[in-house]
Image (tube, rainbow, N blue to C red; front, side, top):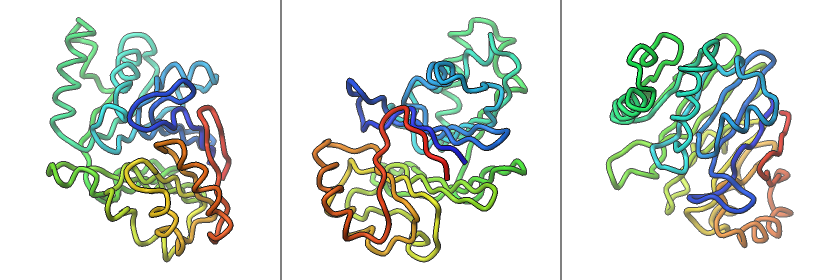
Amino acid sequence: MRLTFFGTSHGVPAPDRYCQSILAETKSGGYIIDAGAPVFDCLIRRKVDINKIRAVFITHMHNDHVDYLSGLVSIACWYYTDMRFDVFLPEREGIDIMTAYLKMTLGDPSLFPNDRIRLRPMAEGQVYEDGEMKVTAFPTGHLRAKNRPAYGYLLETGGKKVYISGDLDGEKIDYPTFLDEEPVNAFIVECAHFPAEGLVNRLRHCKAERVMPVHVWPVEKYEVLKKAEAGLPFPMAYPADGDSFVV
C-alpha cells in the first residue's frame, strides 16, 4: 500500500500545508481519506490514474476534512465520466446537502445523482470491501459533545494494515485500544486537539511499526514529538504535503 499525503495541516491551510487528505493506493485501486485538500488537483498534478479511485471516506463533517469533496464529485459527474466511486459520509444530512448543492451547481438534473458516483451513509464497523481493500470505521469522541459522529479508519490490503485516527477526543485521545494489542504497519494520528506530551504518553504501549503525526497544531509540537521519539517503541515519520510512504 502506498500512502500519499495531499494535506497535513490542521483546521486551516498554511503556506506549505493543505488541510487533511490522504490517498491510499493498491496495485489497481485508489482510496481517499478526507478531502480537506484540493483532491482532484492533487491527483492530476501527481499523475495518478483517476480511474483507479474506488472510494472516498470522510472522517467527520468539518470543513477542513470535506471542503473539496464537492469538486471531486462534480468533475467526475460532468467531465471525467469514466470515473466510478463510492463516497462514505458519516451523517445522512451531509448526503442531502451535498446532493442539493451538486444539483444546483451542475445545473443539469441528469448529471447527479447517477449510478457511477454514489453517496453512501456509514456507521461503525466494516464499511467497505472490494476484494482488494477492506475498510473498517471506529468511532471517536471528537464531536460527541454535539451528539454528532466522527470516525477513524482501519485500511487492510495484502496483509498490510494502516490506521488513520481522524480527529480525536481532546481529553481522552481516544484512538482504539486494539492499537495497544495488535500490530499495524502504520498509524497516522492527529495532534491538534491535545498537548503533544499527552499523545506521547498515550503512544507508549502502541504496537504500530511506525507512527505518523498529521493535523499538527501548533507546529511547535513537532519538536516535542521528535525529542520524545527515542523513548517510544517504534520510529516516527513526519509527513509533509506531497510525501509518499510504502507500507
